[in-house]
Image (cartoon, rainbow, N blue to C red; front, side):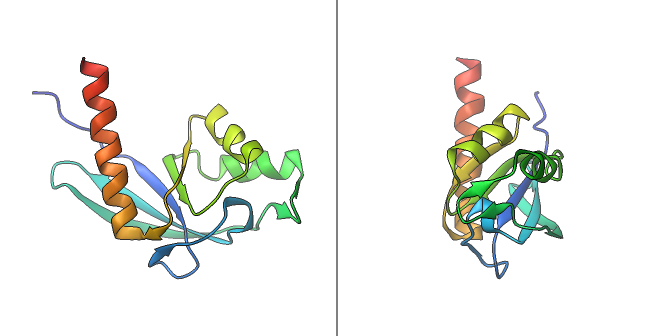
Length: 123
């Protein structure tokens, strides 16, 4: 039987309860790790970062440094993300998803998405 691997997700949130931050303006990301065997998530850490958005303008070097801070994550959940930031993440195989709402609900949606992706790869 094929055993599922766990993966990490960075969640942009001001309070650790709701996905409510724009990627470029977020100062805090909560890192969760999936536990596929149990079908649960475990909060691993809280990462404090310097927001990279300056009134809609982005510095490429700052953006690249920000992206590398999430190199251990497969996904980033945000309320919003601009196209340049999304592209920078995707180029590093980190997939941004706009899933505002309760973190628990957003993680459930992500788990369903991930399951669907695995099923499509098997087809």
